[in-house]
Image (cartoon, rainbow over all chains, first blue to last red; front, side):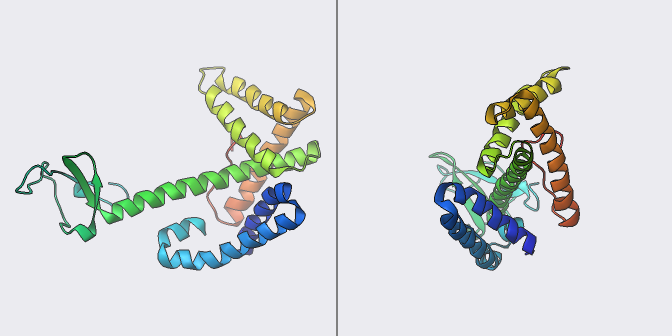
Length: 56
Length: 173
């Protein structure tokens, strides 16, 4: 997982969420998306390797 | 063949037949239920195929959806960058929706023989004109800048990061 992809996920989540939830809400959603991407990736790779390959 | 999943595995059988003989005489390589996926077709007929076929089909569907979403986000990013530069409008979700509507407008008009691509381009710029203020001239500049932005983004994403994705909603890229 490259840092660029993680940054892309966080930035996209931030841009979508900040408009509706404000800057704090956007920051929280971006953090949740980034953490979820990092932690759910290995779990997905363990349980569903084919799907993990698509996501990552 | 569906990838590694051979269609010769797929079998339809008649449940009214007490002897359990298959209605179609295709090859069954896995006869136990655990290795097969059964799908109900009707009250009488069932279709069975290996579980791996189901997993491949679901994975392929999810992969297509993920690829579409990423391509849409990249198309929206290109329009977002150009709208930000040209009109100073900072709204990513607005740009993503514009890319989606523009792609539909393009698809609905580009098939017309001879003049289709020209009409599609005008309609696509019209969508940008409808979604962003500033008139047709500014919309055309946003469209051109979005096209250049998409080329740069895809070059970076595909060449440097090694991903093979496109930009949905930007014509010609």
